Length: 158
Image (cartoon, rainbow, N blue to C red; front, side):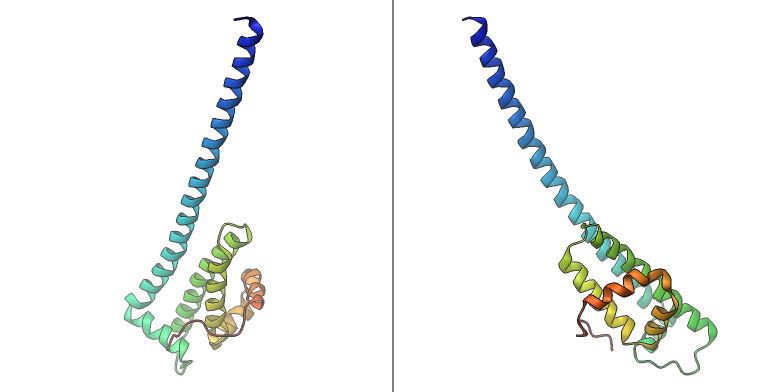
């Protein structure tokens, strides 16, 4: 065997190993993308579950949230108004996180549409939500994103 043949064999072996490495890396990237997507979905759902559990776990907060949805704000104390404002802030922070993940292309379009439509419903169908939107410009990107969604209600709260 001459040196030219040895060189040709070495080039073929090198090309095959590069191809095998690229295929392996492509599979790893695909697997990592699935894991990342699953982690983001879990984080989103965990955020909603935490908010819901917190809201119904305390009878006073559950009663306040109910009053917000039925728009019974009669005789609401300043402390109750403050607590509802904080509930809306926590909810908005979670939504803003999801919106930014959506904008970055990490949170799926269909998931953001469901989250956004539901949030739009929460904010626009309650006076407290509408007031919160009007008075909290930190979340303006979120409020503008609501314009993309229909007016159709997606959830039932009462």
